[in-house]
Image (tube, rainbow, N blue to C red; front, top):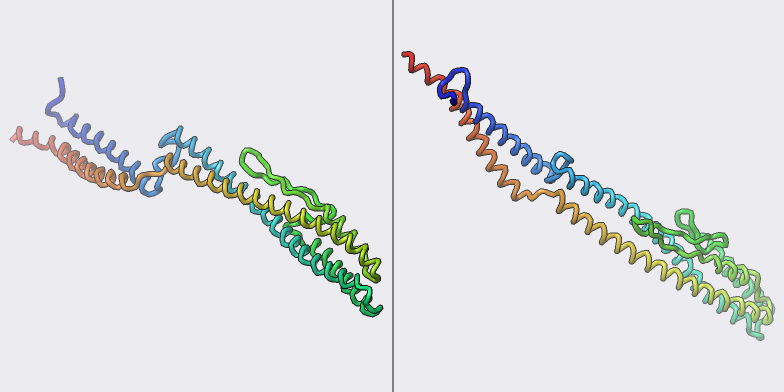
Length: 274
């Protein structure tokens, strides 16, 4: 039989207290969602969703590392491309000097001046090669090797090709002179080889640069999609949580009042003894 009137056991207060505790627990959870912006902020909230979210967060950090690696690769290609373009332009100036040096009507003094200019221009080619260095990597130097850049979190790699073959053509043209029309003719042949080689270099660098750009865009899209998926798992709907917060605050006030009323009930028993 239920206890109806007792000063030792207050059933109404027990019920009111249990309801207040439940309301406080739900209110604490909603306040945590509002303050953090997450509906799942720890494994306590939802163990499986939190585990999935942690995996996605790990992937996002890996995507950042991949993007950094691709950016470094693009830096190497950009500097090398700038150097190769400068060399290509310079070879045009060298061809002009060789053509001028092929003129049989040049005086000895003129031929000497042209040969000096030719030597200076050729020396500049080597300067451009040595200066085309980024982060310690030079794709134009004789000792250069291809660079394998991490392209995705699954270990996929992109290769930035070495263009050391041009250094051979550079050495060849560097050994030439235009001190005579005969020498100028030989130098012109070496120039054509160098021009063909630098054009190949420009083609390689252009293709490698596009590959890096495409992959970088792809990684950005993958990262954005992963962020969106992560948000759907852990982000709280703040508009919905706001309405819950207000409702629970009202329930909390009512629960406190109910508990106060239940605690006052035993005092009414005093009237029975008056």
